Amino acid sequence: MKTRTWIIIFSLACVLCVCVWLYFSAFLSPSETVGIYQDGVLVKQIDLSSVTQPEEITLSGEYGDNVILVSHGHIKMQSADCPDKLCVKHGELKSSASPIVCLPNKIVIKFEDNAPSADAMTGR
Ligand SMILES: [Zn+2]
Image (cartoon, rainbow, N blue to C red; front, side, top):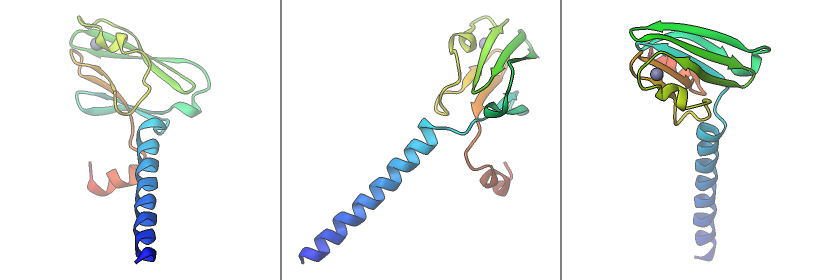
């Protein structure tokens, strides 16, 4: 009886560890690969860890231009002509849970999933 209790506790601990690990890998240390989408279409994919010098990317939309600043390990909306400027106020992209979104110009900057092969399989 005692042994069974310990097995159950041990199993639960294992499950908990896996959950914590998944949580950390998915949210706190996202992949360094960032996707820039406009109108739902992938415009550019950048591996932030391989960026050596800062680069500006300009995208034109219905409400003017969005200037995205990419540097080693960082990406942010430098400036935008959109009326609300929420994308600029968002600051740097830090978490996969909160992508940089520019609604007026339909631009989304977000970390790509850690498992691109899974996407390929589902044909997304
Ligand atoms: Zn915007």
